[in-house]
Length: 121
Image 1: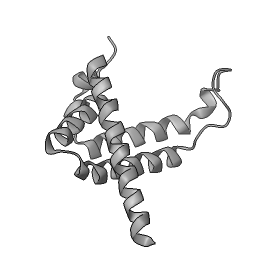
Image 2 (image 1 turned 60 degrees about the vertical axis):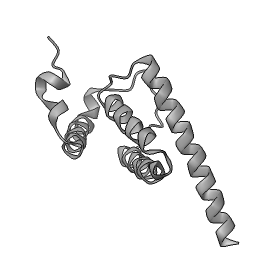
Image 3 (image 1 turned 90 degrees about the vertical axis):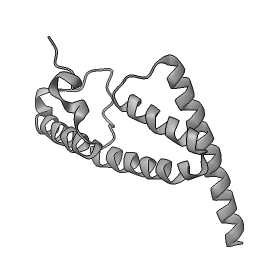
Image 4 (image 1 turned 135 degrees about the vertical axis):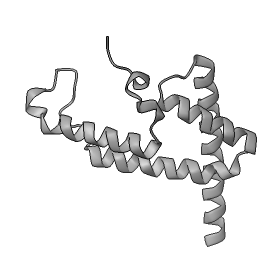
């Protein structure tokens, strides 16, 4: 039987501890890259882990910042959907809700940026 997040207790770890665990797993895999050559389907120009990590953290900061513009109910819903997404448990309806909320966050973000540009003029 393949271990699951639940059977290993990973789902009960805090987000910070899960991120640390993923980093440790990734570092272990990266140390053994010679054993796993790229297949024909994988490009040679992969994005470095540090860049992926930095972009993900930046997106998280933007989501946390921009959610202040959502209604309290929408913010709670988005946070629940993010948590379910991290566990890989989104239903098709939840995925559609998540995408709609993400689009709303983008609209708010664009409006905020536009307002900031207006203030700078």
